[in-house]
Length: 187
Image (cartoon, rainbow, N blue to C red; front, side, top):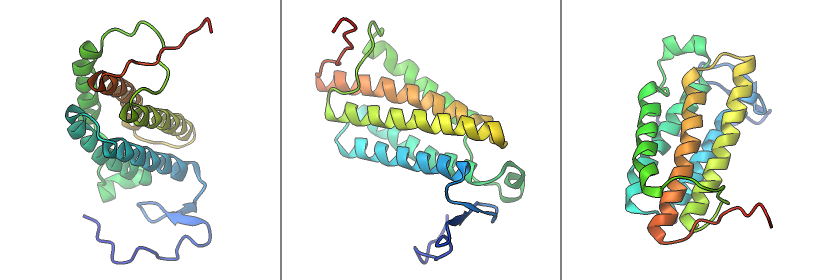
């Protein structure tokens, strides 16, 4: 476990930050942007949890928050440094767990027969915001993968997570007895 004895270091005052392997990079580098967006996503999931989601969603969302720290760690280290440092990383088992959750909740929420507008209950709305931030993280990770090597599990995980957050938002609306707001293409 990391032990933080001091919150500020002054190391970033010049607009750079350290990667896990010690390399200094600009704070606006794409790699830093991606794991910053993952941190933002994690905060939105925390907000959703604080809104009082149904009990069924509490445990998996807590696990997802922990896995997002793995994902941030995965991104914070260059691929060539991972053997030397062995940081926590996203693995296939994390993707599999998301798929199992989606497969469990989908029959409960039913077949999607129309596009759903983000909203409904407060908790579902927070999950929709988390879903859109997750999609942004996925787009940014894809851009990073086009210019630098990253684990393929990163994009896979973010793709599955956005799907899981969508299904969880539908589940939360169902649990709260709130009708899903549907898109009206004729309006």
